[in-house]
Length: 359
Image 1 (tube, one colour):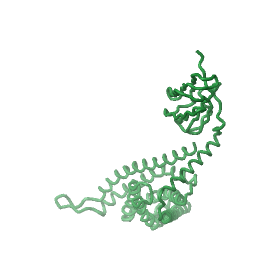
Image 2: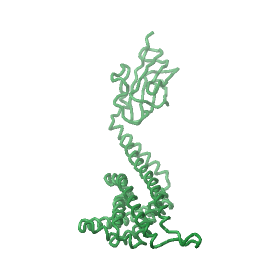
Image 3: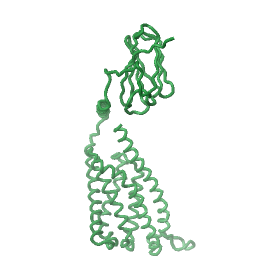
Image 4: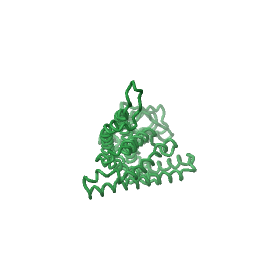
């Protein structure tokens, strides 16, 4: 018995396939998916060979989702199938030679660039629709203004530190290592005291970043700056101060302008890449430099008994603060792991969403 095939017209979008089967007064329509990419169609109706049973099979170029939407009218059967992966296909079928019954549906046909424009227009309309349903925050302008000024001030502060240290390094060479604290400490004190606001901002709902990673970084830096360097005169002339301050400022001169521009809806691709990539080598190096500073301070705390805790005479004279710092060393590398994972997830989300937009 000869198998009768109807005329089938097709078109596509990035995420969908449209099929139009020329079969009027169709009944007993049976559409199924075999495997992940083979469509089976069978129906009774009036086609090119009169009122008969018609069927066809299509093996798609790539896998499709199992849900099939179909609508029968007096003139035709419309079928819509979603692609497994949203991307443009170079053809419909796995075999390069298309079946004789298959032809383009010029009523729906778009080339890839036209479909991309249609997709962007839909996304824009959806975005406007969502934004119109979301209640506008009357203080949004004030919040953005505050965040813009905060990031600007921090950018200027860390830029001053970075430029000052770089110029002194070129002029004085290694001699600049030993007076870094005396030439830049005041500005670093100011910037790190301002950084406490980064812990408060997530709690107040001003930014979407997590509270815990911000607290780890701010608290860790302040221990190094105010306790290890600020309280020990012997540490202030050591070369490790230069490396700690230089690594901190190298990260921040890209992080703060990125957030500053984000407040006004500006995305500079190079700055975005630097913000999401430079931390990979610089952040671990910064933690290693901080650890060296803590290790160098341990014998000084033991000798000076600074911040030591008095003990009963039966237990000894006092408990040295150096034991607290040794525990802090362990917590420092635990914090490195937590923040590294947080920053890595941020980078993945950023570039995954951008790739999705490109496709």
